Length: 156
Image (tube, rainbow, N blue to C red; front, side):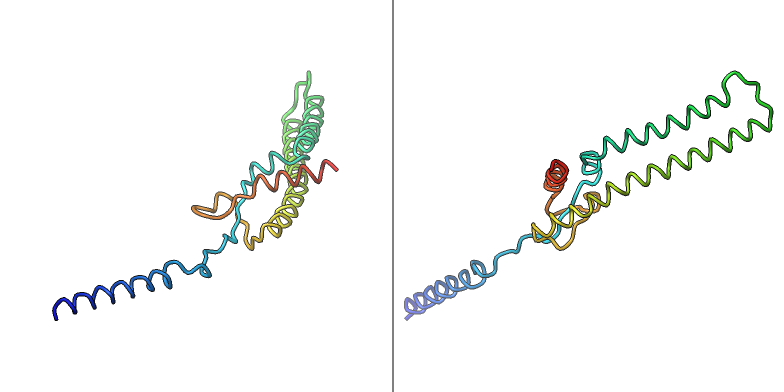
């Protein structure tokens, strides 16, 4: 009788163990979904944008023009206190113009990158894309895909 109980217990353990593993651990219909969150290294995307170099050259030229103008107003002159104030005000105005130009050029590039991120995200079935600095763990890096797409659209 005791052997019969042991055999019965072994049978029950085996039966429930087999079905427990099949149902709870190895259910193929319960696969882990692909991440719907992506991230991008915006600094790398900005630096790699096909228009970044031209934008930097434009900004540099704009800045050099302002600097030449200031230099011409100062060169070889003994400035009065009033003239120094005027030059300082002009320099501040030029700094504001340079910042404004930098913002305009950067916004154009960012607008293009944003549109490309949306296109790549849809293609990769991503619902959210974050800046890489906001992600501690997980997600899908789409930086290279975005850069490749930007290069492809600008090459046409």
